[in-house]
Length: 284
Ligand SMILES: NC(=O)c1ccc[n+]([C@@H]2O[C@H](COP(=O)([O-])OP(=O)(O)OC[C@H]3O[C@@H](n4cnc5c(N)ncnc54)[C@H](OP(=O)(O)O)[C@@H]3O)[C@@H](O)[C@H]2O)c1
View 1 (cartoon, helix red, strand yellow):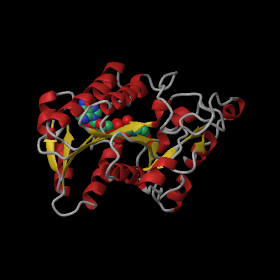
View 2 (tube, rainbow, N blue to C red):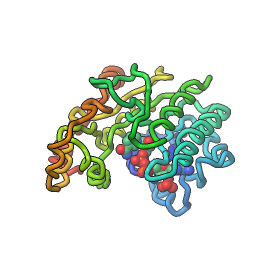
View 3 (cartoon, protein in one colour):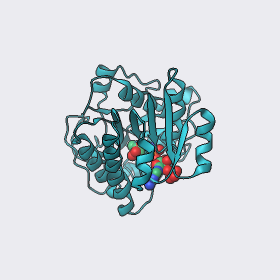
View 4 (cartoon, protein in one colour):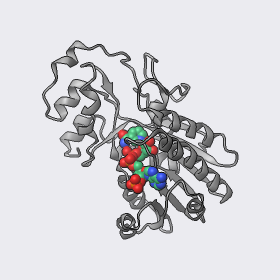
């Protein structure tokens, strides 16, 4: 079994690949797609094959999927990029990768997505049965491009596509928790963010990758305890701005996800049920 993983130089991918390799059985191999040869070296040192190139280059995609049994598409472009790039990488390149995988006879395709595809205004935890309605002021083209990628990939005939929708990912030195204040400083005090530690995101994705008989299935991955804007300031050791208490949360259930399906069907149990459990364990 050979598994191709994209986006391995990013925050999620670089922590996912060592876990995928660690639980590989004899004969199971991992290939990574990176854009820069030097940045592939740490993965080669771990025992992975390395293909160098850009996801938007269809020639590269052919090389990347040759001989592959499964793909985990972690790559995305969303941190401060123009909308055209978000669409080109998150939707167009993901679809081209799916097509390349389909024609190369790849058996499984895990698309890494985001809870932001749910959009606003549910008034309760969102479940995988809820339709995607990305939009509103959040994140520009990012949620819409990820939602479109999901839709187009899931419609591909003959390709066993599974989707994992991630929450706000943190832990293991990822600066994301500190970066959360970029938004949280403008929130109402009680506005919540649904979290997932890297170890649990990897757990969820590995369960989705390995489970038999779940083509077309979508799974939310998250922990058990969304944290408020006040808690995000406290966790970062930053004074709580007084204005937080003057604001009203416009959507108290925004992207808070039910994880009932992944628990019931795939046996997922978060190692870190909350960011506090991770902090106690020294895993921030
Ligand atoms: N982190 C979160 O909280 C979070 C939450 C929800 C969903 N997600 C999803 O999780 C996945 C990973 O997120 P992340 O936080 O790890 O993102 P990240 O740190 O920004 O990493 C993105 C990865 O994608 C690669 N990439 C971007 N454009 C590419 C291109 N044109 N060709 C090849 N590779 C390209 C990057 O490569 P370079 O290093 O070469 O740029 C990098 O390896 C994404 O699919 C994202 O939608 C993340």
